[in-house]
Amino acid sequence: MPVVLPLDSSDEDLLNAVRFWVQLLQNERYEEAYNYTHQNPYYEWSPQLIRDIIYGYGIAQLEPGAEIYKVTSIQKDIGANDRPYAEVDFHMPRKHRLKNTLVVAEIWFSLPLNDEWSDLIATFSVLYMSDRVSLELQEIHVF
Image 1 (cartoon, rainbow, N blue to C red):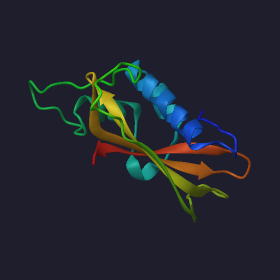
Image 2 (image 1 turned 45 degrees about the vertical axis):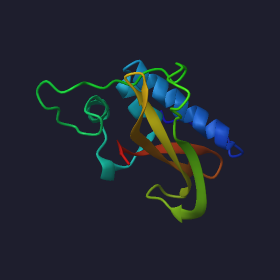
Image 3 (image 1 turned 180 degrees about the horizontal axis):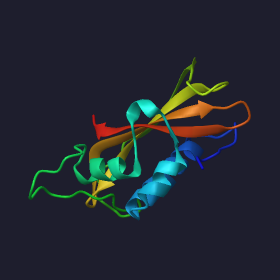
């Protein structure tokens, strides 16, 4: 079941929800991570595709002998010069494919891979659903 947050959720509340999703990936719980967010059929996400995109650093098909990337801990001190990219961008609400739902913001969050902050970014739509907000996974790719 997708995450449900109160309407008055702060930027930090939204980012904490994304951090929880990242922890699911760190523990290779891809099906739970998939179910934690709403899914837009346009992106064709599946738990397997999420895993493959992460393993391939944004590419679903690994070349033989290629390095495999895995999500590692957000809590680990990766380095003073390395900072994760995490942003909540509120904008004019736009209609969403789900009835009575608006997209009110987007979240961009860099993933820690193999103990380094990467430029593999997960993006989410913040969905306003009359009495709550939730997240929808958009993309995971190098920006």
